[in-house]
Amino acid sequence: MSIIQIIGVEGLPIIKAGDNLAEFICKAAEKQGTPIQDGDVIVVTHVVVSRAEGRIVNLDEVTPSQFAKTVAELYDKDPAMVEVVLREAKSIRRMAEGKIITETKHGFVCANSGVDKSNVPGERIVALLPENPDVSAEKIRLEIKRLTGCDVAVIISDTHGRPLREGEINVAVGVSGIKPIRDRRGEKDLFGYVLRVKQTAVADELSSAAELVIGQADEGVPAAIIRGYKFIKSDEARATELVRPREKDLFL
Image 1 (cartoon, one colour):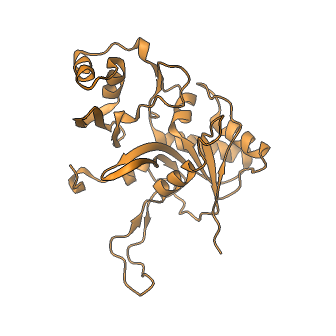
Image 2 (cartoon, helix red, strand yellow):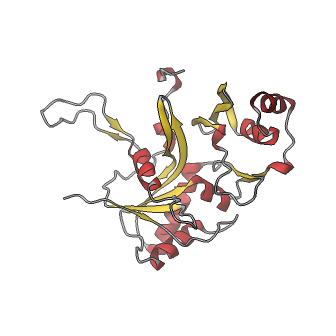
Image 3 (cartoon, one colour):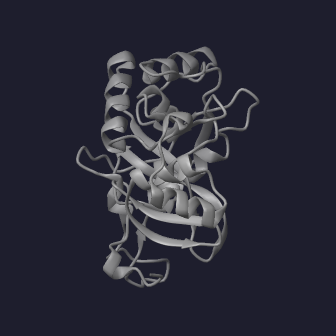
């Protein structure tokens, strides 16, 4: 019988620039009686990673361009916020009904270039995506290994919307130690049919599973331990493997 546990890591302090996030996660997990073990998957929200890395911006210190001012007036948005979104974008994919969909410098297509105001201390402070989320995930994984001796996988998650589906889910924007896609092509189903297109986005599924406990406590839960899932290890995997190439996107 397979059992998978999702354990919220509670009791972390408000993370500030320069904090050792991995150390805080390890200590909090130990304190609550669920110390990190070999084979765990640690899912961490991008906002807390960005805060630890100093990837935050005070909107009061941003000078918006004329284009940002025009877009802000058109969509009734904060010009400084629009300017930050544009700076973090490689291209604008869509602008309609007050929404700005961009392609980030990492290659992700999402709302507002992943710039986030939630769970960031300060009314005018926003968090950007980590400069390189895969590198951020690797640093956390290696630090956990140093502190605990345990081999784990680390996923950095963000909240994204989905074409043709209401609601948002958490997806992986950074990975380390885990292959983000399980390629099941060539396997046989229950009735012997050979699978031809089945590729499971396990890093996204684990991110969404972690969201069931992340952020649910009053003090906030920025990380979760997923225990019991047998993932495929990889030191070379990147979260951008989950991004569908533009030429294959039927919705553009």
